[in-house]
Image: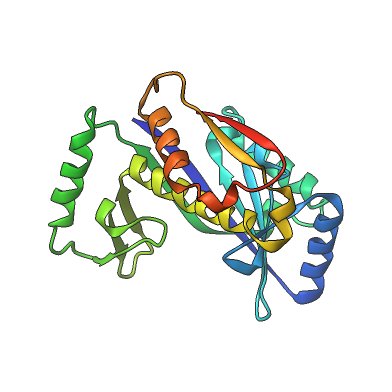
Length: 235
């Protein structure tokens, strides 16, 4: 069983102080906007150090959040390393003490050995009626049929267990459909390839290879094959 620990730290600022930080970040690195949230911008410049910086530029409340993967920090002195990274990123204007802990996550990857057991475990959990201090809930990132979720009534705790493989497949499909929609937009038509050739000469070595091949063969619409260049996709 592999455990992953992450923490979320939040800094709330007024408009002037937030704008100063946000504009400086825009000048120093590329910020990625969230397609589902126009007020959310992500800075991945500290990703190699296990830190994601997110700017929330909302009209009523300005926030900067740090999502920290402690597994990627120095094992001997993780707190000292984190303090140093935060100090350097904010040019000593803000320190770790200026942030408050707003979320903590403990994620365990449970190996149940056989694929069919995953669905069996979920069915047993989904039959649970009541758990003291918790209410049945759902998570927008995971379909209800492949997950089980409980929200604490007053303790701020959320319990979520889900089928990792099926979730990954669903998210991959969603990403590809969004990518295709973007590629088929009017501004991208001249950049599309004339044809897409699937290299399926070799037998798939595992279920992942087979999945990638099925996805490419089934969801690529014929309308995309219409322009001047060729792209070879090896799966």
